[in-house]
Amino acid sequence: ATSHTYEHLKVSTPKPGVALITLHRPRALNALFTPLLVELNSALHKLNTDASIGAIVLTGSEKAFAAGADIKEMKDKSFSDAYGTDFIEMWSDMTTAVKKPVISAVNGYALGGGCELAMMADIMYVSAGATLGQPEIKLGTIPGAGGSQRLTRAVGKAKAMELILTGDSFSGKEAADWGLAAKVFDTPEQCVEGALSTAEKIASMSQIAVKAAKEVVNKSQDLGIREGVDFERRVFHSLFGSKDQKIEESRYEEVQRIQVKLL
Ligand code: CO8
Image (tube, rainbow, N blue to C red):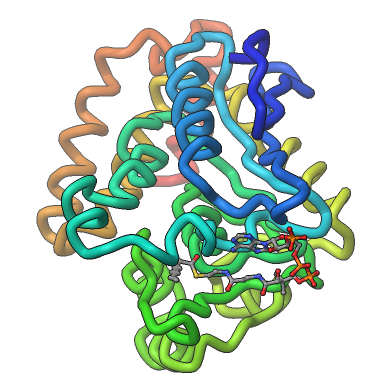
């Protein structure tokens, strides 16, 4: 994926095991139109099957992560256009097809579809001055790429309802205070750097365990607690079959000491 050139994205590997995808449609503040989404899906698919990549960071520019779905592309769509092509369904690739952790580093505007894209990532990092929001209601519509579901799970019904019904935007600092973002940084550069170091840390772990961990945490969003705990235990059992889980003899005593402490 890194050697491939894209028109609306930049893909690089700034750290070992880490891919950085930068949305690059500066003239439209990274508004998410179909050609960009096709490229994004293609890049994600390639990175997903690239064994040298352990984690992915997704970012935009300092001014805009993404200022929404492309209003110009959408304004004349009819119901049959939207329903017939299952419009926006392709966005879900980001979470269904990608088994490796994705961290969004959000700076500037992340509005509408941009906010939804940021929330699709497994971990969201923000800079304090970022502007997030679901302003669809102001355009006579509602979030269409998971916003009403992911925002509500992250911040609770009261806050999500208020944000989605008013279309009011919120800051990166608020996103972190409410638990939507995992970390907040003072500047956009620090935000991207922070996301890259976390990605590097994740990429240094067992890829098979990381994949399993992502899968079980995501399941918690779909399953009740009992089924979720059962599912986790099954996946946990399956990791006894992985090479990475086997403790090297040189570490045996250290691990035993930890186990004794836990008892
Ligand atoms: N779609 C298409 N083009 C965009 C978008 C967008 N979402 N956002 C910005 N642009 C373009 C502008 O048209 C402008 O292009 P040009 O120079 O050719 O006119 C360029 O980006 C720069 O934008 P501004 O000059 O407006 O930059 P500012 O710094 O003055 O303002 C803002 C930045 C506040 C982010 C402003 O651009 C803005 O309000 N953008 C729209 C935000 C928004 O409402 N996004 C859509 C959310 S809704 C959604 O994503 C899904 C549902 C949409 C349904 C639509 C049904 C009609």
